[in-house]
Image 1 (cartoon, rainbow, N blue to C red):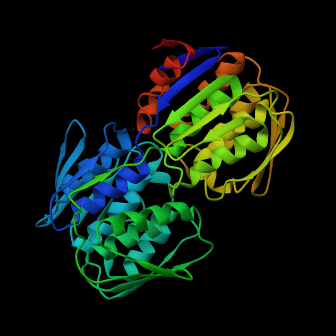
Image 2 (cartoon, one colour):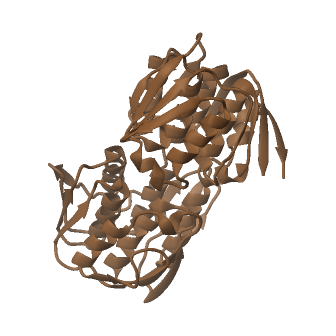
Image 3 (cartoon, helix red, strand yellow):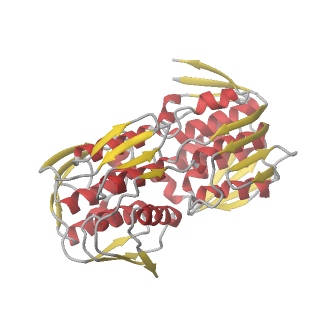
Length: 416
């Protein structure tokens, strides 16, 4: 599907969609706990549904309800399970270690770019713990079972490796230690995992990259709620900063989600920002200023930040961009190609991307099958008018994105 966005002034308020990152974690903890749990998550994404389906394959009873999910935990893991993770890296990297901890012979597969995304360091860590694999990339089948109490994993490729190992070790029931090596990335997402485990009675301690997981089962609190998603809200806040005045409600100011960094970036670029404990407002206030921003812990902000930088006056620099090549698309290449389509020059130097903001011009952009590339192009269209293909990719994280953008005043036209 292709969407064309005409230059538009936007204003009003939208409610944040539930964080798929948080929902993944709550669903997994609930499926591994000692008693049923309600996971409040009124709107779901394609990635969240992939995790729910894979947990069901591992023996949990996961029922979709009007408010989210009713989860009855795994009582007895199956001898064999087939798990299709869709395009969800979180689903794969979290549940691969969990399947090994449960001792399930699990056949994993995926779609899109997922089979080509890095996995080797995670399978290496699991092999050291006693697991075996038919291959080191998808499709693969697990064998064996995690044993012992001391484990290690490289944290420099993805925080999802660390989170997956923490979930796996938490469900063994044993007291375990996880040592991380390398320069840890996206540490906020590991913190989110620790918070989810704590909500289920498992207080993991961390000291210098070493995590100590106490013995015992996860304990169901009866009900948990997925937070509003700062990653998705960033697109609407950018829309406000570029073309009007937008408030996103349902955002926790004290969230562990590092993507709340978008509010700080927008303020430094000259947008008017107002925040309280549960909402954030961004409004245009003259021309945006160039900025330097480190996205090492917030790689999902890169696509929309590139659009903001394109419209800002002068040279902006994004650092920590090398990891963007291993996302749902090669996001670094995709960003530069779409910026060129918008008439904006950019260049890379090592782990940095420079964007020479001269203003967005009318464009035809590609979505690259990547939800965040599609949404960032749509936001850019509010400024100068433009089109983007692969618009259906927004279902991965924000199914109601175009509906919300239109609600705010965006003028959209869809074609098949």
